[in-house]
Length: 492
Picture: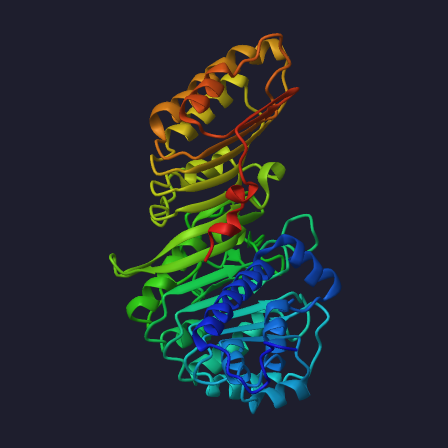
């Protein structure tokens, strides 16, 4: 056909590179969604689904379009190495595959719930890492609870490789478990685990600056000399022993995780930050003790170049027992000192735990289920006023679900009018950077007069989207992208 390009005619290199870069960025975004999406997580746990690297497969198809494309395309594909439920023979073949090498920057290792390959798979991973020393980001993801491929065992295997490797460019490590933890889901409370080899390995990485954890909370070491009246049973939280007639010392808990020596430098600071979180007790009964570490389903630890130390900038935190226990935590326990740099936070906690953790003066995103049980309407009004008073000027997204007991609607009307004034003041004066407000006030009464006129007016005046819900109340103004309320969209 006239004007058709012959198979030997070269394709403009600049145009090809621009197209490949766009596909590469889409591939990164798709892999990130696969890591963080709740829907994908459920698929991995229930069905053992592999990484859906469709963009990577599409890139490889481009090699067949024109002979001059093949080397450039393979180089772009090789910038990201996806190692998902790989068979032993495939892993051996990958060791010598020319597509990966010095240009590889990211590596994804994932094992689904039903993966059961030979343990020697790690030998092949070690050899591949030796060929890809310029990796900047490494992700390890596991969905198993019992096999050799739990996040705990995989992290130990990976730590051994990192300790003996020369990944001098590694900056970001993601350790993600797909196993959910809860008191009533059969998996127990999230366990705080001793992993000294992991921190020793991180200490050998000169440019390491970002550790992300999900469903996994490792510390450097436990204090094995703490009072014998406190033990760590198989249920994963701490328990008081029954062999003493003396009442337990409730101030023992801050000494559960020990000092992080002999670590040094920035990794010592990281281990000490994790130690502080693991030793922040939130719920204490006569039988059990849990800390923030037991309920921290996600954490992002980032090195702050200005402060020259690791900070925690994003987290998901929940109560483990909630109203299932009578909390006897003494108010004299030390307050946490790690909350000041938190920017992105998702909470599911009681008002008691909130008072332990707040304030968070750097918050930009807060999504919270705030539980107030066994309190009068006036007390709940005071609790919410207290919470709102600590929300910083930097806050951009507030999604607050207040869960309380139910009372007679006539009693609540006056309290709701006061809450209307509290939140209107927050919108008008307190949080000048607010971009969206979502309030789920399940206790809001069914009344003839709508009790939240001031909130609606304040949001309309500032053109802030408002999503307000309660009993027979639903008021939404201005359309918005639901993605703004998704915690995962703020995690890099």
